[in-house]
Image 1 (cartoon, protein in one colour):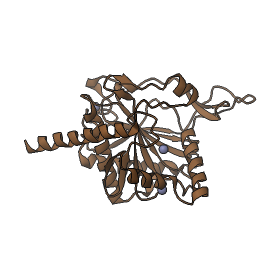
Image 2 (tube, helix red, strand yellow):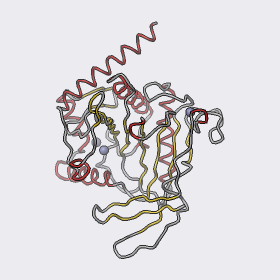
Image 3 (cartoon, helix red, strand yellow):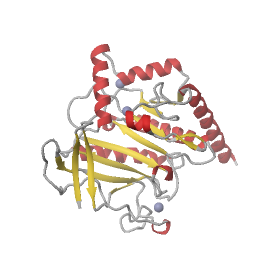
Length: 326
Ligand SMILES: [Zn+2]
Ligand SMILES: [Zn+2]
Ligand SMILES: [Zn+2]
């Protein structure tokens, strides 16, 4: 097993390299995340497992030494799977509400634990859903990567929120919440402590951001009421997605927070969702112009897509209340 970091000098970022890593073998009959399996046992609501074939390890081996500008570092870190429920099928909009609450609490605990390791600089939480983005395992789960470096996308957000703070004296994200609330057109859902909107600057057709209204940089700073409201907001966003077309919509969900150590008071915890569809039967690909140049093209107006999502949320809620009253 090899787990190493290789420096990409063109982009100034680390690539996580591992070999001997296999994809988890699975079949529905032997889903590794169902209760009663060797790794899972019984009597749990939400379960954290070590990834059996991790990209990063606590005792990593490298394949070679650094040479010149070709830097190699050990691939130190943790890769965990968070099994969100005992049910084999489902999504954040169908899990029992208690599970959602417990899910967020478990993430908070993991962040605390992982950041206690001095070598960990960042805890990246994400959820991939759907075969279209390479996830064939339907058992509801998320992943956590505890990384020995700050991810490039977060580096960019930190840099821009810091320079916004220096220039204007307020938080970039709080400013975005204020602008979205004034414009109203792109808001998908709002409760007392969270707001979900398709941002003015969206790059994916149905990209949705979920920001807490109170300013705090890290997930561990969330309070009880906010845990409840975040669970509610996640459920509503995913319900809108799953009511948009006549199928369960694949998406990536990422939680963006400040790094473990250091002072990042100007940063603001938030969640970003990127579904890859641009219509019922077409994907938006990160192709030549997007991936090769990082220039995203948006083929409609974000305000129109937000309208579609609001309608989808309403029809999802109508369906849910109809099934309750039956
Ligand atoms: Zn299962
Ligand atoms: Zn803020
Ligand atoms: Zn972000």
